[in-house]
Structure formats: C-alpha cells, structure tokens
Length: 184
Image (cartoon, rainbow, N blue to C red; front, side, top):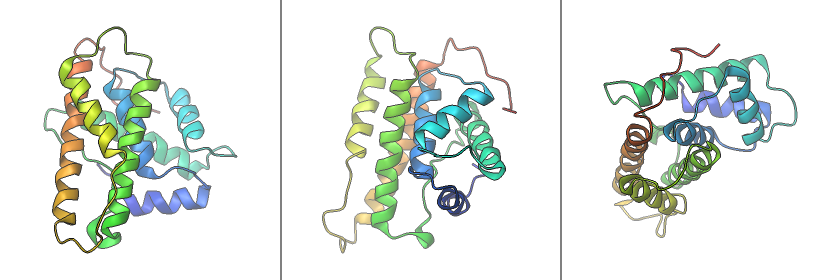
C-alpha cells in the first residue's frame, strides 16, 4: 500500500473526518471483499457519508480517496498477497492506539461487507468464521497496558485480519468481473 497512515490521518484532521483512515480502509476492504464495486463518484459519496463529512471533500482528500480505492482493490486482487492494513506504525503510535485502529478497521470491514448488498443466501463457512473473528477484533482492547506480550499479540491479530480479508475476497469474488485497473 502506498498510502501513509500519518499523512492520511493529518488530512483527516484537516478535513474534519469523523472516522479514522483505518476504519475507512476496513469499510472499503469489506465492501470489495464481498464482491461490491463502485464507480468513482459512488465511492466518493460512500466515503463522504462514512467519514461523516459536513462539506464536499477537498481536492487533496478526493485524490487520497481515489488512491484508497485503487490501492485496496489492487492489494486484494493481486497475485502477490501484498494487501496490507492501514494502521499506525510502531514508532508513530502507542500500542493502545494501534489496537484501537485495528478494532476500528475490523468494524469498518464488517460495515462495508454488509453494505455491499452482495450477500445473498448462505455465506460460505470459512467466510462466516472470518467474519466472527473480525467481530471479536472489533471489540479488542488492552487489559494491561504494561503487558510485554501486547505488541506480539497485536501483530498476530493484525496479520490474522489481513489474511481474513484476503480469504473473504477470494471466496466471494470468484465470479466477479474484474474492475478497471484504476479509478478516475
């Protein structure tokens, strides 16, 4: 992913977004993983609503949102399993903030998955299991801020969430017509 969490977070503050970059990336990942696709304008509208923006997005935010769509779809659909979660780096955030962003990403994923409207009938068992895991992750918080295992557990949960997103994407997108390579 080419989007830097800190740069996105700064633009979020400047734009008065009410969701984190992690939550929005989670939403978009869930939407795309379920088999949903959006036109450029529909994506910008969905993002604006999810971020609870009071005003139209600035040109800088609009460009970043388009990059979000392209990066997430490319990461999910690529053969190299290069998809990554947009979370703050160790050197930029305390472990509690990282866990909170992972929880927001997970909740966003579930929201996007449900919003896609692509779920008809029975969900495959492996997808259902993944959704249950992400539901648990959406409620994650640290019990003991001083526990030396926190960072390792966080990294394991983040990797599990990343693989979960890929699992859902592959399971739910076998019959989806590929989207255009870029969103303009």
